[in-house]
Length: 283
Image 1 (spheres, helix red, strand yellow):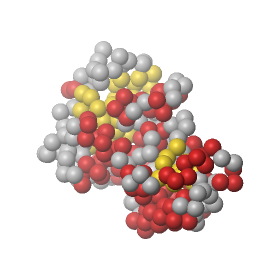
Image 2 (image 1 turned 135 degrees about the vertical axis):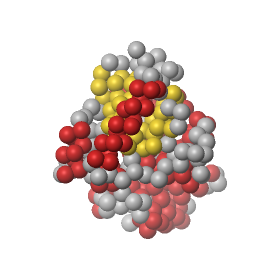
Image 3 (image 1 turned 90 degrees about the vertical axis):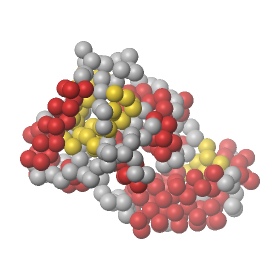
């Protein structure tokens, strides 16, 4: 039977009560404006990511969406933590005890939770779950677009042919901060990424060399594990400006950052050239 809005509202209220009992702070949500349209969210996310492969097992990304919606003064929805019942199976299932234990002593192996946004009027936004489903079913993500995989629907997800039931257990981002799953955006780290993109453009791309995004990520993930997401974000944001200006061309394979390469427009023939055309990492 399809999940009912009233049942979901009760679960959401209980999740907020659980968060309060655990001493967690609630976010300053905007819920008295208007919900963003699906097209607006698609445009917002597409301007922020390189390809939908970045959303694979990355449900924490909804926190970035929440922040962006707040900046645009649209309804942010409520950051909702919980699990799903999909096609009769529990996905990311956990108990209240698990949440309490994580707060007391966070594990290093990753969280067994899912995160989405709940908007007024029982609208659920989830950009990542179906990305995982498609990828693990062998679908080439490079052949899909965000609108095809993003959940933005009423409780019960009537647009889905497969039953989907969202089960909230906590509300708010405070839990995610306290267990170290997300951190405050570090402006200096992002600026460093921007600087590195500019250095790549001037010293590597304009010289006819190819830049591999995967190598860049691996370098900073190893050398600066706490700041690397912000460095990489700054790098890709600046590269998008070069792409929009037609100065740089991006090549992708298999819809993954592992296969993303950048080359100057004047040297696009080098993308299939020998390995010594690959640029050294900016550091």
